[in-house]
Length: 174
Image (tube, rainbow, N blue to C red):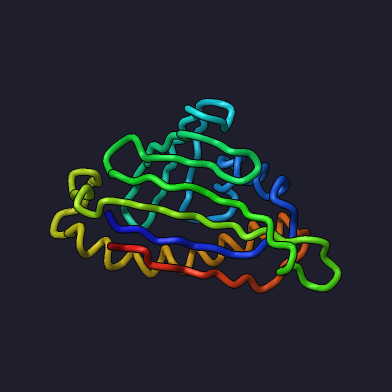
């Protein structure tokens, strides 16, 4: 299994951040590549999300399921179709990291573990002469840039003002 973690600080208490994370369909407002999020359930355990992303001539719908929740600190999930992947959102109180004028802060982490060998060309309707390796090489830097933009937009909505956001990305692969 390969794994990575993305984390950042949000200047709000964990309960506010957690409630936002439960509203997964709202994420579609933050990325031009995220076309649609269809939710089946109330956001708690067993809720399924059908997440459609599109880039270039490609479109893919991931199917994720919430497997456990620990309000206001953790949301666990796994993919239930095609790729073998699972992970969680963690929200930890971090009052010592709050800047002057803010009462508190929370460290928000997204941890993803996945089996890269579970990806295969049959998952996508690839144009002729386009390999899955080519798509992965093109999409990887795009995903990294887009993730930073999305986090900045989310933090601006949560905190009520735009600010530079520092993302920490940690490769936790074996």
